[in-house]
Amino acid sequence: MNFNSFGFSPTLMQGIEAIGYETATPVQVAAIPAILEGRDIIASAQTGTGKTAAFLLPVIEKLMAMPHDNQVKAMVIVPTRELALQIDQQMEGFSYYTHVSSIAIYGGTDGTVFSREKQALTEGADLIVCTPGRLMAHMNMGYIQFPELKFLILDEADRMLDMGFNEDILKIISYLPKKRQNLMFSATMPSKIRHLVRQILTNPVEINIAMSKPAEKIIQKAYVVYDTQKIPLIKMLLKETVMKRVLIFCSTKEKTRQLFHELKRTGIKAEEIHSTLEQAARENVIIRFKSGDIPVLVATDIVSRGIDIEDIDMVINYDVPHDAEDYIHRIGRTARASAEGTAVTFINERDQQRFDAIETLLEREVEKSAVPEQYGETPVYNPKIRPKGGNRKFGGKRKGGSGGKPGGSGESRR
Ligand code: AMP
Image (cartoon, rainbow, N blue to C red):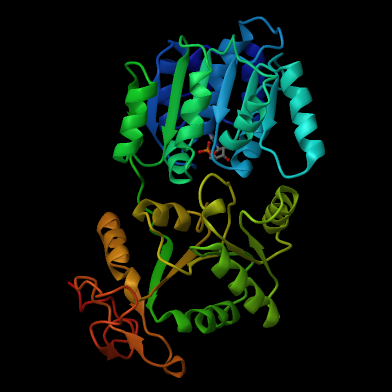
């Protein structure tokens, strides 16, 4: 479907054309007409589907017809600063030829940023993009109200709940006018999201953009290992081939730091990104990684969703992602366009069942590569047996993750 078919105003079409979009994506085809009609929507769609334009474009179109009186009329709430910044940048591009104004409120610890945000909020804009905690901080100071708010957009709602923002979101909403259009986007639809939908949305149109399976050209591999073998193996993988961009995901900040320092000690040009870093440092790392200046980035979940980094040669899951859909999302960062990409996952004894859930979602087994002998014995892959008491090994020991079959495909399981 062509963007002309939505009936957007010429100045908005100019922005869309300047950005270079021609055909609308499925979530845009489904959401844009419903939003233009004034309906609430709940859309299950991930980053990469074009969901940002799916809500920004019709909202900009509607804002164009409203008075530009410095009253905030649309509020986009997102989980992370990176996503706020990214949406704000897209907003600037789309609305470039229109009179619709926007500001991003996502903070940083610097006091001058807070004052700048305060000033921007008091002066007003048609649309704001904000993180919940930061917006609450401003609202608590009492100088902003939203009497003219018409659109509330919650993006990556599941992520926000995972990050503990439920109360902040409900509190923010309690200050908003009751009569408004609500648009909610979430990558996954757990029951807590359904509950939030019932609390906030009115008779919503449900849009379900099916989770796409990873592209065939992504080579997926896993190593069944003990935790102590992960760092030596990563070093091996990084030294094996020259790669332009490698993204490594760890489950905690501590592991991210540890791995980053370990790689640096070995002379590998790497950087780290997690929530402890200042906002400016995080943005700088992302820019340098995107530009190819840093070949290896060690990250917590902070960049796993929402951030649009393409052309990654290899994604390494240092730990198995908690959410099976996150796995698909992470590895989807490789093998974009015509390039090939590799996704490698380390599975320790405790993560085997979690990986099994991923294979179930993928509807296929991922090859369990043999760990070279010099790294010692490895656990057997047997996810159907529950590990007793957290850290205990189970299933005995054998060489090679696939039950001694180098490069085998985990036949021990199925
Ligand atoms: P999103 O899911 O909103 O994060 O979008 C993912 C990427 O797809 C971004 O780089 C967008 O600029 C791009 N994109 C979104 N919609 C379209 C479209 N209709 N045509 C081409 N690219 C698009």
